[in-house]
Amino acid sequence: MTHILVTGANGQLGSEINAISNDYLDLNLFFADRSSLDITDEQAIEEFLDRHPFQYLINGAAYTAVDKAESEPELAHQINVIGPSLLADACKKRGITLFHYSSDYVYHTEKNIPYLENSETAPKGIYAKTKLEGDLAIMKQGGSTIIFRTSWVYSSFGHNFVKTMLRLGKERDQLSIVFDQIGSPTYARDLAKASLDIIQKIEKGEIPRSQLNGVFHYSNEGVCSWYDFAKAIFNVAQIDCKVIPIESKDYPTPAQRPPFSVLNKSKFKNTFGLEIPYWRDSLKDCLDVF
Image 1 (cartoon, rainbow, N blue to C red):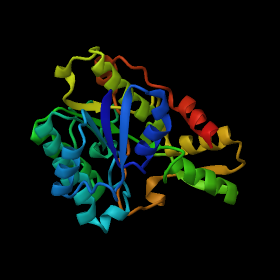
Image 2: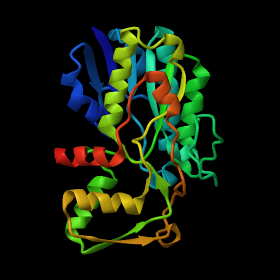
Image 3: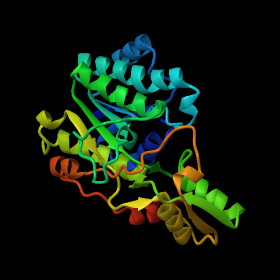
């Protein structure tokens, strides 16, 4: 039996892992939320991991309130930088493989071709900067770590764009959505499944442990704007709400969003041998859950 700790149990990723856990009977999943494990408390982490013999730690805990981070920089830093660094250090000491999840926001350049894992980073805003700092802090520890950079995550759990559109679409006749920010949606359940599938492949010896370090990109296949995404949500959900395309300058936010953050996922597919679903198919799967 493979023992796995999942932090951030009540977040989108943690909730989706819990939802599909019965499909992985060979994996013993232990879920911890903030009340049972504070990832910013070094002593708490050490004592917790000493009590439980985990082989993997999936860190689903993160500060993800992009705009609110501008007014809570210290809290964002604690959760996105200090916590992951402490987890990485504790995992290295015990030979635990750490799975960590980062963001497309670290790439905020003027390029308009899909980003590779070694592409230039240029985060803007507190959230983006803390996600990159967290990645670097983890890699500095030098343990067995996989960092997944993902984008536009949504789920039937938590707060996200899909759930917001479903609510507003039923309340209003029309919505204005930006069309000049381009990326790829990611269904958290697909990311959860990919993470557990990779662990199974590792345990079966199908993936060499020498490949268990570094950054990998994961998002659903395909590309769209937030405008296209909203249109698709209403189409699949059969909600009659007009969507008006607007420019980002017409919808100012405290934190800047990358204008183009499409991720090249070739490294992920070549390394792990897993297919990635198309974003519209995954959207339909998600809405079927509601």
